[in-house]
Length: 278
Image (cartoon, rainbow, N blue to C red; front, top):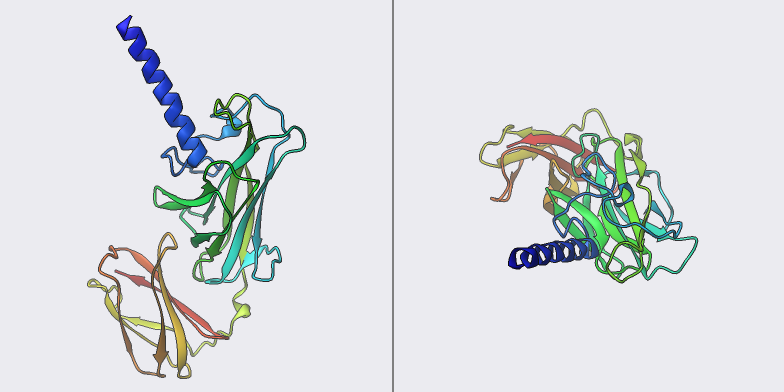
């Protein structure tokens, strides 16, 4: 009898923990990627969690510029709004949940999810990738600021899946949407002024101790220096004044590990980029 009771208690606790993880977001809860991306270990539409109801649930992904226009390509380093819209055609679900991730062609994190813009939403880290997902019951729209990666990352994919839920916590009267994805192309380099005699030089490279110099022959001006790691996380960002032909010393933060980094300089009409190895 005691063993049976302990087994039932263990099962109940497991169900409670699973629901808590799903309710707070699967990345936050440690379950991981449920967007249908190549990194997904499960999706709710595949019978992994929510089921039993028939709400006609769908999820859609949009990327908006600062004017609110939907875009299909990104300008490296520019800020956008990532929006998830979850809806149902029948019934009256108590709320919605969803998850999204932005990946490059190698399934690495692409760009940076900065801040959430809607209630009951959060940005969660799982396996060095950041996910936009619900926190509790969401009304059907999740938005967050997303900064595009530096030049050279190429085509990006955004994956998402959602669910309509009854709010009672049993997951048997919910319905998951099918997983969806959209593609974002990198804007042509002609969007900025690139001159052949204005190549960015980095030395020494590799920079074993994280200290290096940047130099180029462009006109003297104020530039935004931005350095990001291979998963798109910004490790250094500051405005600097560069003089043509004069080396400018840079030191990576001490917490930066050995690896590949993207270095970019940008002004109002110019962007230069290069790769750094530490």
